[in-house]
Length: 291
Length: 247
Image 1 (cartoon, rainbow over the protein chains, first blue to last red):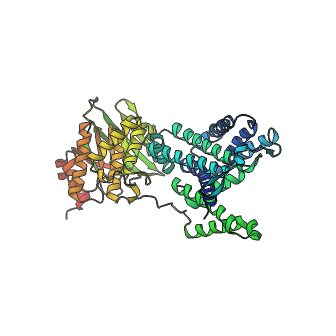
Image 2: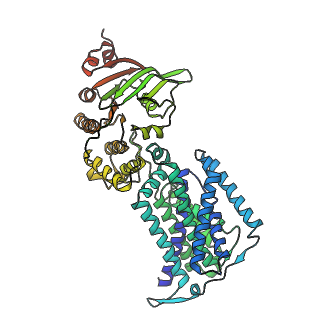
Image 3: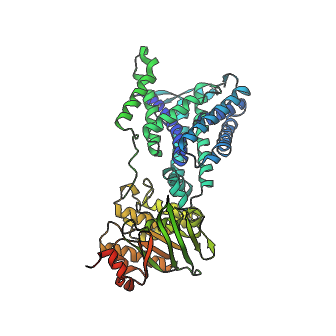
């Protein structure tokens, strides 16, 4: 395997892992299958479009702000009152939020797809171990890998992370132990907003355009990856997303040119096979019971 | 571990407590009292209402009748979380630990929930883990533990909530008598150091007799006897419940 292929494969895997963690975190804590996740990604992408002529750190910072604000607003305006609702009600509410935000964007700022001019440094190539590697792929890997490492540190090494993981596993029990819902839930939405923003920045770099419905596909990738890895297990969800991304790159490389159009058919056939063998997901273990 | 804290003695009291499901009285007119530093055993045959009484005191179930008070504070319609904040903490028969968190993280999560900062929460969790003999398992995920160790982890987690009253639902199930007595004596030592009252639901009469200051016996949801263990053991109604009528 060549270095450029490896960088592309691991980079896309890391991007998809970010998407799946964003979906799985809220599902674990609230039972919320958040279909509005795509619109948080869209909000960040819109910031990239709006600030495309500003220095890139400004555009990136604004993407983070837009995504976190939309994530927190969706929590405050829609999901706050539904905290104890059943998952189906939450899912329908998230559909409503998704369609509302998308429609508002389409009616106002994004009636049609808008191009975002690529930064010149993204189109360059670097010589790495004898191979020519795209800066865009390297940055995808660095940014998504860095974000994954930061999430791992937050969840594994901080008090907030321990409370988030406890809440993601059994929110009722966590609340009974005094874990504050009003701390954990908004923090989870902030984490989701940051992850969505980073994913969005990478997506805009790769696609070069922004549209009102651009969040749909990444959201579906997040849901599928999380289901493959195990919805109730954040590590499993990350693994599911990573494998999905890596398999996408692998299929693009190994499929003959006349079959490349069917890449997603091969990919999702594999997903179905995995779910036949392990319907609970790759890393979802049985819940602990002692009686 | 930490030194004893001087706290005003408290009383957790249920007066005339009852739970009625569609006419069925799962618990009926039960009055029970636990004082700081005291270990009260709640015993009775299967289906006698022991766990339901624990559910009432902890806020898992709302009382259909009666009142529950912690000193002057009325807990009767208070949520479980608020009761935990006031120091009324329970464990469950099934453990209900966080399976993918380590033992240390399970205990730390409870300490953080009680309002401690990270450093103090970790120190408290480490101390409790040492006290209950969980140190060899501290960094293992709870899902990899045996049933007995899961129960002890659940107790450690409850202790990390800094309880004033600890409600334990069969904490020693699955352990032999000497292990059970040793575990409950550790809990008792911990509780007395901190002037914490313990209400213990336990099947094993031998364990209860060795560890409790006061016993409360339920049958079919009603109190049949209460008093010092030696007196309760001689009570003819208790003998009848446990050994049947003498012919």
